[in-house]
Length: 607
Image: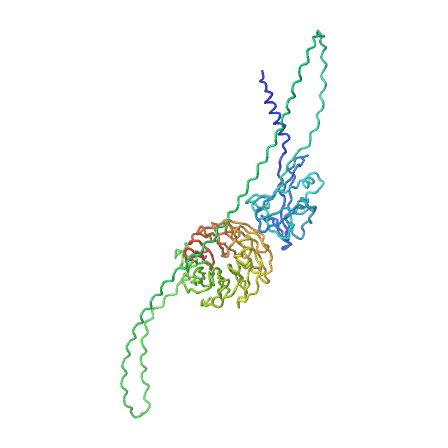
């Protein structure tokens, strides 16, 4: 005999079944295409980029694939989910319906479809610095319902600024490192099923015999009305986990004191001069006779013997063979001044700024021998060579000093903005990033005269030249600004990682160190579009290009990282001195300044 199911248990099972029947189904519609168009480069397609940019003159476009919806599905709610990966400047944007088709691989600013009506009903979404590394959710139910029921064609949506300022970006479907692509989150419900047919009426049973009429019983009291069972509550959706805040960067420690200069050694005594022989007496004058024969020429003092000439050697070994023979497959350290910071190569010599001793040191690149040390301004920092002379930024003097590369003599000192940091030469002029003035100064290299001063982002620290444009690293804005070298006009500003500092050009791309993220970002110099971001060591600071590779100093690891410039792959990490800072290439070797070791490290670039 089967066991009976208790009524209470049966009621629970029935309620649970009803709850599951009314629970809405959830689905996610992935993007089938996303890109953006820029008025700065109106014919450029950005379909392969890992970010979707929103700034003045730039509009982002997205399409979503709804083929995954089951037949007859009803969309109860549709939410557009976006991930903010950078928020350089606050602003607001809105979502717009698109009524014309487009393709991710061909869309650009010139051929982009026009914007339709606002999907949010004219309620823009605000982006602030706090929005970085968070998801934003936008209700787009009415538009997606129209796509699903066929009253509107699914041509996607566009995102555009509603404010005159704003600079932020979102992850695209190509952002495989984070997998935070745009997405439509859908709450689905199905249509009610048809009513089943009514079952047949059962046969009428036979009439039983009439029983005896019983006495009429007294009417019993009415029983109390049973309470209506409560409807089970819908389970709450779990909250989205909070995104951790980016740790703030610690303050820059004070510069160490300059050590006292040692006393100059005494000059050795000069050797004694040999005694001059006595002069013979003059003979009496004789009568003038006929011209006699010419006397014998006196002896010339003997010259020391010349050593035999060495035999002509065979052709010398190549660079790799020489290094192998001398066991130079390891870093070599050479002493510099106090707290060496910036570094540059002039074709024969390495020049190093000594930050706390207000000097620069010149050493032979061939063997590290010091040629001389020369005074400059207060807190000498960055350094550049213009083909004839050396230029040094004096970060505490608001100036640059020009020295003769051949002699080290000071040619002149010229004013800049406040706290000049990075410096670069464009073939005619010197460009200086002024960290506390939020601008760059252009000086005529031939005279030091100021050509112009141009705005940049927050705390510009690094500067580089790409053959046509000047690129400025904005530390406080997490961006780089591109200026026309011919006029100083701003071409564009592009996002980087957190705490950008060093910058270099590889002939095609701009590379930027992100000191807080422990990465470097590679940007296409022609458009500023991000090509990729690659990990390096801890506390990266500066970088240099050796013709094939990018070398990055890791200040917290006491190492340098070598990356293949073509794809960002790590080729090796090598030890240097303490807290490595600036880096330069001399055609054969990589040179690194080590401020806390008071020396520089030389590494074979072909290592």
